[in-house]
Image 1: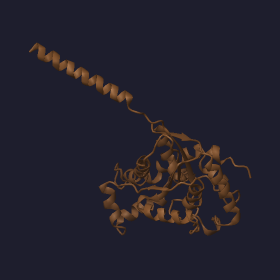
Image 2: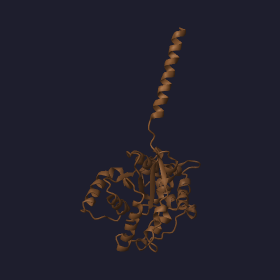
Image 3: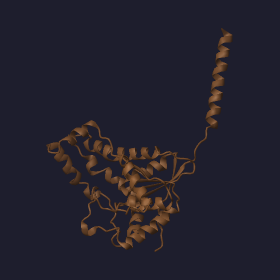
Image 4: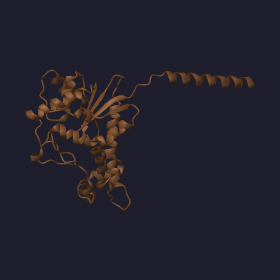
Length: 285
């Protein structure tokens, strides 16, 4: 019996040693350099909280803005990304693949969206074969799904009104746009300022976040959990799903609001090394 236990412990010890050696020899990939470019939406779809009147928009197809976008693309190319991800739903990947292929063959004229104006141009300049769609909607809790089902219900109308009309409106922070007076690049510098990004997250922690249908419930908090926090976690997970190697460098082109979570996730993750995009936006006219 004693001999049996000694043999058993020897075998266990050998297994532990082999496992340790195997783990120690496993290659550990260095953190992947990543650059995030927070943008305004060049085509002004007005689907966000901030709405633009027509007189306050710009047409990025005008020659002066096209020249500015060329400068921006040249500056971003210095980061040498091997992977570019854009704010398009994953289900649009085949469509984006098709449009990008046509653009590579000079058979497609770029539309106004920043994912084409910046993403397509830069990818073609760097001779990349693909641009990755990683956008997702967040998933709501069942109580929020039920609330959103009936838009004519009293509960929904009250909930919807609280989104735009609440006592915290004065606390919201949105830096004043400068694209009309100063141009696209100064606007991007403003939007990617770390302090502005940090303060923008505060907009999701007041107002609608604090909405309660009944005393001490969490309707507003549950809604924002799915609409914003879960959505960005899913976007981050989609980026993780992209197969990479030790030589890859990733550029993320997304609406600037997303950077208040995405940048934090990239900074915390052991898989990525976040670079400061403002170093690439200091472009001389």
